[in-house]
Length: 145
Image (cartoon, rainbow, N blue to C red; front, top):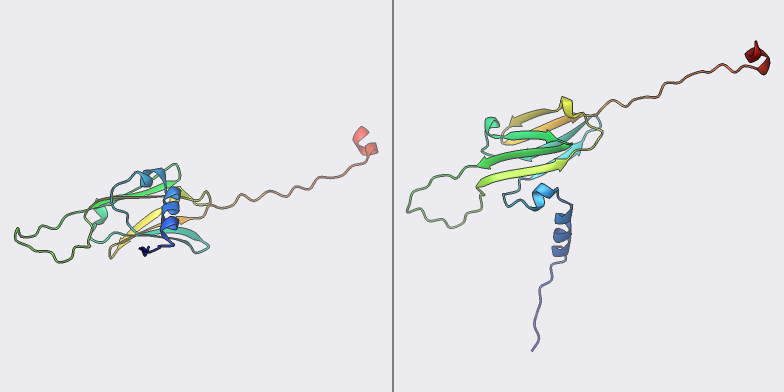
């Protein structure tokens, strides 16, 4: 008797990618909100989808170069006799953390909330440019005087 086994070539990749998550995420049992992380050359951005969350209910913190977004999707009250045919919307607490690159200025971060999307913008730090010094070259005769 032969058995047909369905292979999922991406299953192992998903398992491995979980190893790269921040420690707070690996042990986290709360829901995971989707993120976009991008850079336009002038600033670094983290954009998260948080539908139904008011700005006052969203906690955005930075600690040791780790940006953390926290909040809670509150359960919608339904009548006792409500019969669901499909329920895909997640409710409950969420936490999402991402390590920030050392090129961003966390002191100048700005968070905006619009249409269920929170965007945190970090300008890049100004690079410290080395000073060019000109040193006069002297001969031994001029240094002995």
